[in-house]
Length: 263
Image (cartoon, rainbow, N blue to C red):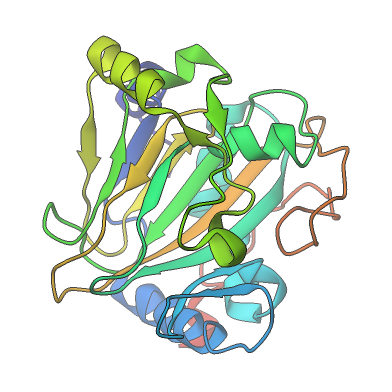
């Protein structure tokens, strides 16, 4: 189903839009099973908490046919085409699970790393999130600065080698400095992004965002697929393929039941 004109306006104005009920309970169940299985991989693509439990897996669609099918789900493909106005490829995908007392994600722009490290030329792309859990204000929701996409690339960002997860997770993340964050929040404000399981988030890759520690007993499991127009491909191959694409083929929609075939 196409995005409404209000959805498109919200995306352009705030930098993101949430589509409720994009995926059925059965589709969510398929994706949850796949995500939890992939998080058990032993490879370097899985980032772990201090206790060894998995926190993130980059390149999820490269490792599982169910997660590969998600990339081609018509709800996701049609909404992305509508917002970008052109064909797109997947620059990066990942599973992100916030467990109780797990990692924080410092303030950053996804485009900051994609541009500085991967060589993606222009700030054109979408961070897509699929909610597999209900996310409310209590289980460490995504925090975002509405309108920050109008800034383009925020220049005052830096790597933080003192971050406790620097070697495993944040070694390529350019964190926004405190001074810049204070200015951005004063100018634009700060919001939580909450949604029910099965919802779809589409966010401009230049929106400044982060998340705090989850001190609740409630898990927060999301799938991310970051896409760019096919003419906005990375020009550096410093990072492995599970971080940054080598395949720039335009993503085509699959059948509406592409996930239900795995139920």
